[in-house]
Length: 350
Image (cartoon, rainbow, N blue to C red; front, side):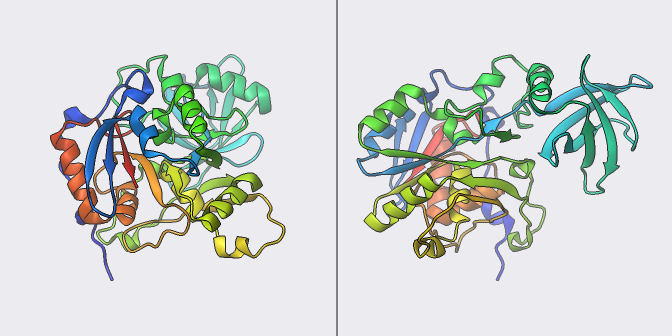
């Protein structure tokens, strides 16, 4: 069996790639796609409440984006180096991406207080880097000097201050810091809209998936079945697990906000949990790859953004709604001049 990456391509005018967030957030446009009939309706995101009903379970990813892009200078020569914090390995050691002329043993000066030592080349495009600060002191400096690692299709001569708040969901938790990129479907929600959704009788629960650089990794194989996903860390509380199991039992809709929430839930062995008398918190790494032919085990519906051509995320939504329906929806979105990608408009597949 083969699925070709070219089957998930589409033509997108560059001017439709959103460079800024709509204000207010919930005034972005919303394309509604009925996955059974293929019917398309055009609304604004604040209209989502009209398509939610009491008993629905809305699942949000509460991971918080941190300013992972650091600019520093070699202590010996003053040459510029860019450090991109990718994955924490221990209390003061990180796996990082580096730009600049680098070798093991170099010391990089990042601020008056923060230095980084280049420990090891991992020979996979990443380096092991050790910092001289840990814990609260480390994060105080990072939050001051770091830049939010916006996707490469958002063009900036220099990062604007508002990106630090704009590229963050309103429900991101200070106790769940760890994403290198925002779970962007959640960017459309405001605190006021969430209150209205709750008041309607919709239950809201949270998962944590720390979004890694694999989100932006292109599929380089012609046959997508040969593509290997990057692993990302997931945490799901007992309360959320029980809420999902209850919704499944009652036949209530389980609506994932974003592909990260979807992938978190679909990585769980629900059959095993149903038979488990003592459910405990789930913490694991997932490299789940969802593409057409996949049978969904948890979610019934998905709130999501418009994704890049040939991307694994476009393959995921095609698995949920069908390739034909997604192709038609994206064609209509281009025709209607929707705004695409991270700061763009939204889609509700139900």
